[in-house]
Length: 268
Image (tube, rainbow, N blue to C red; front, side, top):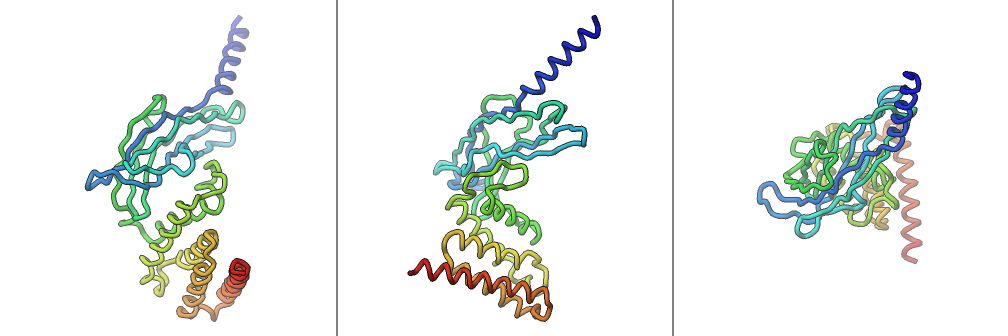
């Protein structure tokens, strides 16, 4: 009798594990400037669900995008993130899934941003939220800002913000591409005074990333100019006496020649 009871219980648990899903609430929100309390148009809105799944091999952490692609606040600062369901891994791949984080954030091209944690609201059907944004990056180190740029660049390159984030078909749209370009240009201007002292470690990589973004926009002239800045910086810092930097220069020169060919074909 006991054995039969345990088999029934185990069967119910397995069915539950296989059929369960995490469902996020619909988020209806508004983005406001923290100081003026006025609506902010054109804020890039992202919502992320962080989950932890227990497996035989250890805990697996996943960070999943909840918002639909290209979510931005309208002229009244408003946005909507629809409800979304995520299947829990079925037994025996996973035998226990919990929510670590859930929240929504907004950022603007002029370096303002803010976020709201919504972890305690999982299970609700709909939420009304207000995101107050204020200047970001004021306390960021150069390395932290560069890490942020790499995330943007990776998104425009692959359609992903991270390894676990579902890929966005065709990657960033034109608005997001311009956003990424502006952020790169701001970084390069902000840390220019540090680069000759060797304190801006991501500076060369940012120049190459920016060149790719210009190329993605079809602006081959700006892409070439950006790569030339990288070579000029190598020369100014006396780095070309080292073989590694000589190889880097040769690679950049090949890219410049490729871009010149694309420009020639475009203008024909």
